[in-house]
Length: 74
Image 1: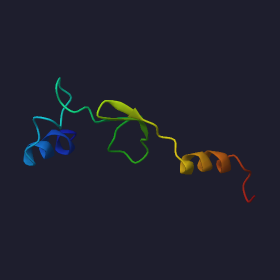
Image 2: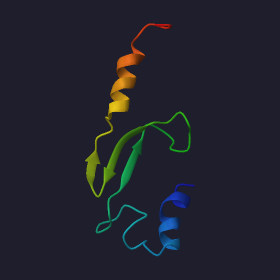
Image 3: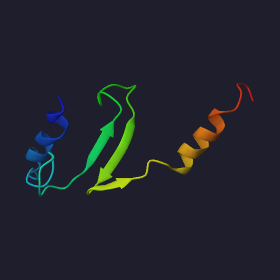
Image 4: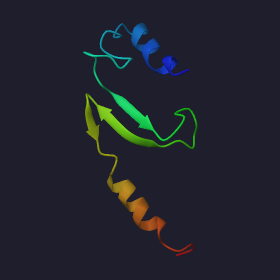
């Protein structure tokens, strides 16, 4: 199933020499999940684009963390 969303599309679009699998010389775009990436309850833990980690913090995630701590019906 994982190949269906990684290497197979890269082969179809003719870019499998650069994308679609983790190999030396290929572009390192990677998402690290907390569990099965095909399950809705699984969350993204790390994102690497071209080998550089992308921060997952944003204004929206900071506001979510801030207001999640408020008591119900606040």
